[in-house]
Amino acid sequence: RFRSKQWYQRRVRGKKIHAIFHIIASAFIIAGLVTQFTYHNRNGYSHLFSSHSLLGLFTAITYLLQALVSSGVFQDFRPHLLRSLRADFKPFHVVLGGFLLVAVPMTVAMGVTEKAFYANLQYGHDDQWWYGHVITFSVFIATGLTCAVLSGKIGSSDPYREGSIQK
Image: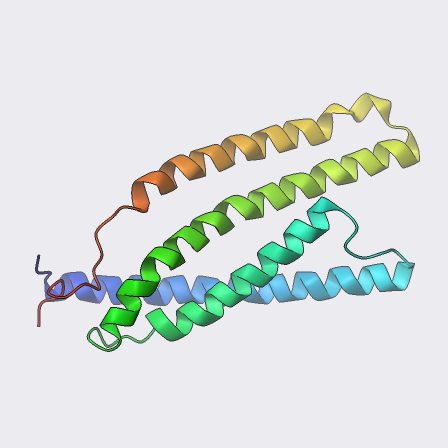
């Protein structure tokens, strides 16, 4: 199917906004990792001992690699350049992006639960045992809704296939 020039211009604008958000998120991820490792080093805490820290590091590295590779493949705003590469890479990009949309809130939920657990052990706040569980349950619900939305997006049409953009 052919698409209009206005559709293509909206698509390019959307891709630019998408790229800006990726740049901002990448900066926050790098700042967060630097801050966390600096804090642990200064206070003598061990690194990467919990499932939260391991999943968080894996998610951060995967996100940064996804942003870096995708900027080279998708952010060239000439529609006919590298069309077959884009078409081949898009399913991988969509699935990996979906994984990251699920992994980020899961990592946050694990961190909040871990913090509540250690606060309970350290300070004996038995009256606040529910805090981490409520946050974790809320994030699981949000993650489930995200998965439901993604299940409809993965099989969508591919604008990089031959004949999809009007010349």
